[in-house]
Image 1 (cartoon, helix red, strand yellow):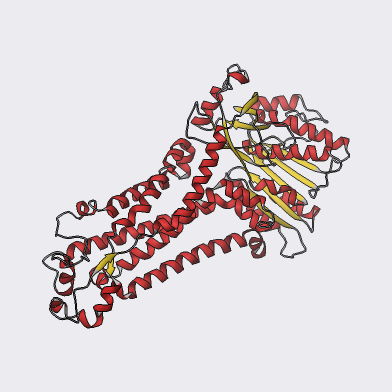
Image 2: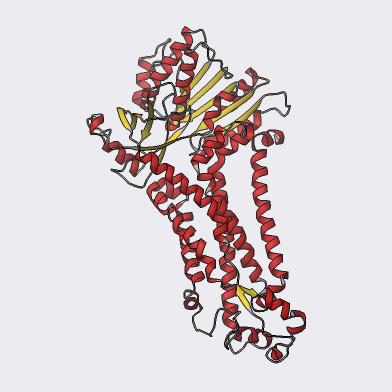
Length: 568
């Protein structure tokens, strides 16, 4: 089991450990630097170790803010995916986990931001207390610096106010810190799965607060609240000799009054590159938004599914890719991902859209798919398309054997794949590494099969004509039915064709026994690399991952299942 787990998850684990290692290294190295650096000796007298906690977490925060935008730069990831020389095998599968890494980095930002905020609250209280009458000795002397001409201050809190929060909000660092914190809370809370499913629009709009987050982050350090002794002052003022002679700083030549300055802001240096990269991403999207999309066909399917056929100049795709769709008549900001269901060989590209939220429901209504008469293509609302972008399914032709599992509307990525297989089988001169496809579709509504059954029937017929009936094995599972459907099935039972789909392959009732299915596939292909591709809910995803680990051989010469999940 361990060997099989390493096969599927080893590289991902190494990359996560590398990310953690860099975070720990940056934190520990920065922490000890601020604990020992001579120029911050007097700052530590006031703040203690919370100075190091604040600065170490700030550096890790900058590092993670540098990374957070890269996994969602879709054009960059598609470019890397297309560069097969640089990205093969397990490295290629890491690109499909871009959103997982994006979330992981977001957690890193949240943790370091929390440490940074807490540390600075302690710092503010210590700055505040050091201006009180209770402060004595060196602490009081350092806090009073800057009260006379030709002196630079160390303590940014210049008086002993009653309200430290008011004092904080008078500074650039305080105001921007508050804005950053509020933006982060909004983004993180609206990104929870519950919010995304309940209101995708809320998630979409609040996520764009990241613009305010990055602007505030770039100017956060310009307030230069944390100050250290200047290098010129260090050369004249020997800390070891002078720190205990603070009362003589004004009179003894060997101990001139120490001079302080704020640290240069550095956050903008960390985030500049990724922000420019993401800005280019948005410019490309805007350019594609301007390109005309011609809607050639609209089909309304059962179960609230809308099929759109479109054309766009210069549009090129591969099986399994997806596009981002915007309908300005519904929202001028929202872009929603949909898997392409057409094959590259067709002269159009298509998507199947199910009503699953406010935006998709509005789209179906705008196209007359909610029990209304479908509109003519010329009278339909305008659509904008960005993409296409690559996903895990684009790697399906790299395996000799593949297992495709879809649940509900998750079947859409496999429509393009099966169509592409159909066309490739029609072209006698096209050599295929892929020699066997196992296709599983689990659905609770019998009406959902109708739009996909025609494709499977044409594939079934084509394979039979070419003597390749062994190439595709498909298994359809119906998990929901009522008494009327059961009576209909019993009355119209046919030995040759299925009552529900009209296919030769009978529909199964219930859920697959994945242990039996994987055991049989492993037995049929004892020394093969088998790609497992899935699109559907998380619970089934975890089950399939477990099956891949369980039935992969520890022997390098044995069967190996490689798990790939669609995510966009």
